[in-house]
Image (tube, rainbow, N blue to C red; front, side, top):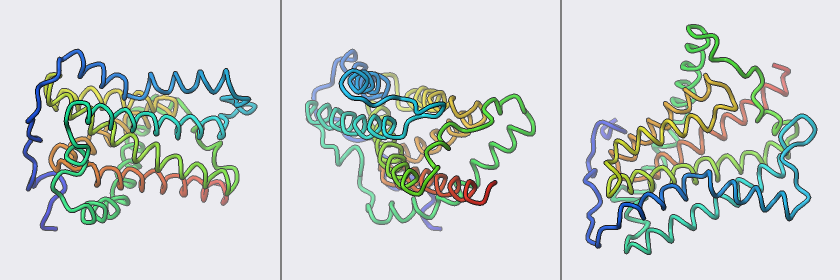
Length: 254
C-alpha cells in the first residue's frame, strides 16, 4: 500500500488558526460539554421524567431507552460541535475532512475493518490468558439487544450513528481543541483514550482495555491524516460487524 494509514502524513500540518484565540476556559468548557457525559445525563433525565421509557427491561437493558438516548445524544453533541466551531470562526469541514479525498478515506476505513476486528479479538484473548481477572463480566450486557432481527437492526443503526459517527467527531473535536488551547493534541489523545476505555468498563475490564487501545489508534490516525473519515467508517464498520457476529453466535447457540 503506497499510503500507510499512520506512517505517512502526506497532509498532516496543524489546521491554520487564522482566528482570535479562544480563552482557555472556553475551550475547556466546550470540550467537557461534548465529551458525552453531561449531554447523556441531561437527555436521560428528560426521558425518565417526560416519557414512559425505562432504562431496564426486567434484568436487561432496554433497547428503546438506549437507542433513544444514544440517537438524541448524537444530535445534541454534533449540533454543539458545529455551533462551537462556527462560533469561533472555524469550518467543520476543515476540522473533520481536512485535505484527504473523502472516498479514498472511506474505502480505506472499510478495508481495515477485518484487521481491527481480529486485532481486538487477539488483545482480549491475550488479556484473558495472561490476566484472567480482567474478564470480570461474563455476559456482555449489550447482547440483550440481539434477541431478534428487529432488535439487532435497530442496534446496528445505533452503533453506526452513535458509535462510529458521534464518537469519532467527538474525538476529532476534542483533539483539535487540545491542540489549540489545552496543552497539546497528544495530551488530549491520552486523556480521551483513558476516558473512552473507561466508558466501556460495563462490558468488562478486558474489553475496556481493548477498546481504549482501539480509540488510541483511531486518534493517532486522525492526528496523522487530519481527517475523521477513515476513523468514522472504520469504527462504524467494526461496531456493525461485532453486532452481526453476536447475532450469529446467538443464532448458532454459541
